[in-house]
Structure formats: C-alpha cells, structure tokens
Image (tube, rainbow, N blue to C red):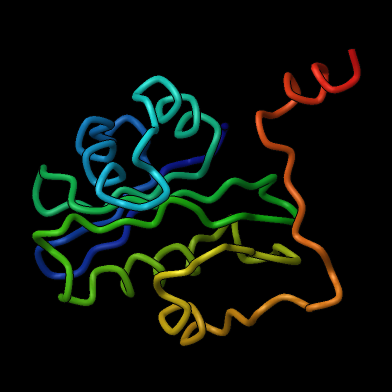
Length: 153
C-alpha cells in the first residue's frame, strides 16, 4: 500500500500509520487475546498489515493498540482488528483510536466505512455507525479463492 504516514498525539500517547513502527509480535499477542484473532499467524498479520492502512497506538516506544482499514482509499473501507492491550483498557484509548481513524485524510471521501462487531456496538454507534440494511445478506466465501476452485473441480 502506498500511503504517507500520519500521526496523532495526545498527552503520553500517539497514533501512527507508519507501518515500519509496528511491533507485529505485540500486535499478534493483543489479537490472540480476542475471539477473532486467536489463530492468526505472524506471516498472515504481516501480509495483512502490508496491504492495509494500519494504525498503531503507542505509549512511548511500546505498542499498546492497533487497528487497520482495508481500503481502496477512494470508495470503501472495512475497519478491522481494533484492539487495545489489556493493561491499557478503560482509559478511553479505543475511542481515541477510532477518532484518529475517522480523522485520517485518506478516509474522508469514502462512500462507506464498514465493520463487524459483537463486542462494542455502542462505541461505534457513538461515532455514527448504524446497522446495515436488513434486506441485504452478509455473505462470505470461507477459505478464499482456493476454496472456490475446489468446489468447481
């Protein structure tokens, strides 16, 4: 992904989209504590980070939060992997991280920013996120393109 790094600062914390700052081991440890990231490998996380707009949350040089937006930077974005280290939860850092994401200049003209959540719908509703239309079906292809090929062989 070819984006320019952006930084946001608040007291002792800062958020950066500079992927070279990411501590993938720390991010992986945070994601392993979630219901969705437990089986993620470092290799998969590295590929995902390289191809997403990533937001690292730092206290000094220590990474304490992470989120990424999978996007074409023009029309659509999908907010994913929002996580705050357990030792830093309850301080408003998740809310601030979302504020930083929504303030990012490359995301200002998207037609839609989507997400899935079962843990924090009230947090996202506070930013204006609403449930999608009920008449549409959420669909997925499990296993990606290789699974589709197996089904057609």
